[in-house]
Image (cartoon, rainbow, N blue to C red):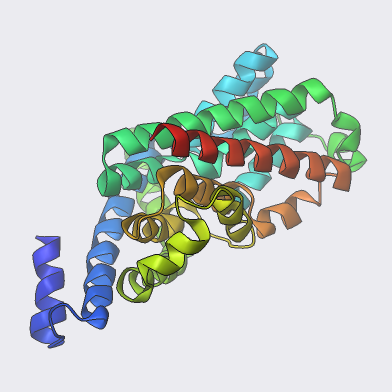
Length: 316
């Protein structure tokens, strides 16, 4: 139905010629905009209801009372149903550090939350199928668990700004019990709030994806980041780091790049770099992490993401 509507608007209402680059770009934009916002609305609402059972204090309590490696796993899993983008995950990350949650565990959460959130998984499923969604989710969780575990073992707490540990948090507060109707009201509010915060990023990303789909020659992309270029994955990561988007925003671009012939590992590495290594996130993290700690985090993440990209280029 959505494809038929996009075709009707493109060819009947706008009178664009079949097969033209502009028509291809417009049809892509209309179809993906409708599909992505429909998916976003449904999934954010459902997950918001689930999220209402895991407020920050309860989450901190769960993570603080587990062995560290188990905490890494739990933190990565909790990241799936917590904040929607990297910059909104940072305040919770700070809260975990303040509450005394192990540093490596907090980093597992920080990596997983923007990279493997529920919206990314559902959109990947809708655009690429369940196998690709499962691959991305599995590798994202492994990156989060492994990176957090390594950071934890390095014992780098001294590279966190001292004032963070001096802040007192309400760790002993009881979680407020809500009626189910209140949880539904919260879910409606949270869905509208998230859509207000991300709609522009999504529209811009879909527009870029439409432009790539309609106008960018396949040879241009494959020349710089194609299968024959041994440096395709690092190039994709380097391009992704300066960009800022949440997973929902970057997926339309990834979709368009894959249609142009880029390999799965390269586009996965690009997506991970955009969602987990964005410059705004690094700027916010600098408020609580000393430069050495920030450098270690960026270095571990960069190496891990590049390794994932090469691995999947080799096996897919």
